[in-house]
Image (tube, rainbow over all chains, first blue to last red; front, top):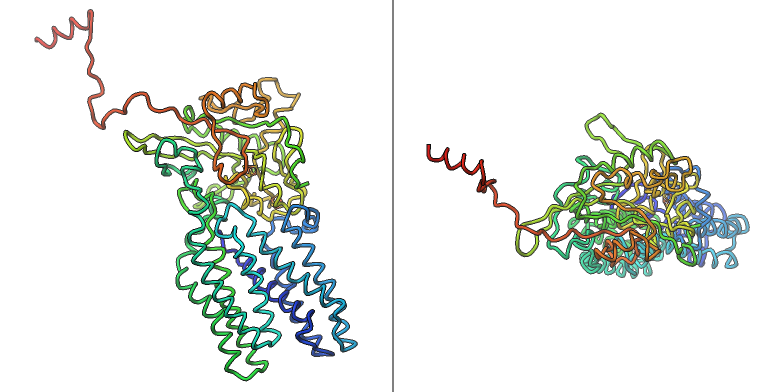
Length: 291
Length: 245
Ligand code: SF4
Ligand code: SF4
């Protein structure tokens, strides 16, 4: 699949912001006054920037409000609802922290749940697609949630917890890479099933439908992006999990330490999300003799 | 509404494509593009049409495959592909806006372009590459089964067919009600063992493909003499005479 920068930025930043909001809602961090303003501003900033980036890849963003109508069947629509609900429910918690100086579990707990539900809905947009076997697996929501929880823990300066989550994240990343490589074959779609010609023999593409490219090929068959995948896999595990854990465990806890750990983690998260798209193979490639 | 109709429609309009007959002429591609650019919805745009890297929106494309049996010569098969109007259409349920829907009355899968935000998710959900986001209009385009022809009282009756079916010079495309077991198309499917594409994905396509028949004679060896004629009658007498000269 095409690793569109807007979608990569959206999923990474909104996941981080929502994860941070969840910790704030649960009271892991209890800022007040101006400090609370900055902290909540940061969390909202990430979440909102991410959500805004997601509208960049729409063909007709002016109609985005319509995306709220089909929550019965569509994970994208459910994501629209939960994300707006999170931002609204957490707002009183933020205001109470800033102006009254005390945390509010009344708004914080449901807000935290909604934040995580939003991350889950985002992940299900990908995990539901049978056409992309690598995504169509429980590891997709698990990875998205674990990224949000890890990033949130780093931002809330929970050194021990963040380091533990980093270990889990690293293991899950390695597991999902290895498992993902076999998913396409497991699904059983081949050029033979795609064309129904398997009953005659082995199928190969003789002529594509056109000499140029098209929307489908640009969007779903992205070979170039996979070129450095082996190296990027190592980078993603190292930066998203190993380096932030080490940083948080050996350096004294300070704003600078948290910032450094977060910077490492984000580099790794972007690399992992790039691979999430670039390595995902869509079955439509079979009609083009490619994956 | 992106919920699929609660009870699947009795009527299942769709296409039956005969892979034994298609000659890969792309006439259906051209007529489809023509009709659907001039009629329902946003036109099917082309990008950089006269430049170095042209591409455009098409609702129907012809792939050509070579199939190699375990023994014997390979076969070339031209393979038209458009929306299969699936009964369990994954493209419909993923749509956040309700722009994608499946009609309860005849099973046609359509996009309401005024509601489409162009998120592209439905194109991801379709296994067959049947949906393309138009790069000029930013809305999703797909085969409408020429819904603006098949019910169109202003057209002469013989034209009330999808443009591709009406155009195919080889007669490789058939249109009809696949929900009615006695319809011509259903009988054709039964006789010729019509098949589903990627049945393992559970989309239950309405459109069916008729497999190519096995070759009834081996292909000629490359560079073998084309004609080894034994002439008879007057030509035979001339043949023998000329050989003697
Ligand atoms: S062929 Fe693709 S676009 Fe058409 S109904 Fe099936 S899934 Fe949807
Ligand atoms: S591109 Fe349009 S029709 Fe397709 S899922 Fe998005 S809103 Fe629905």
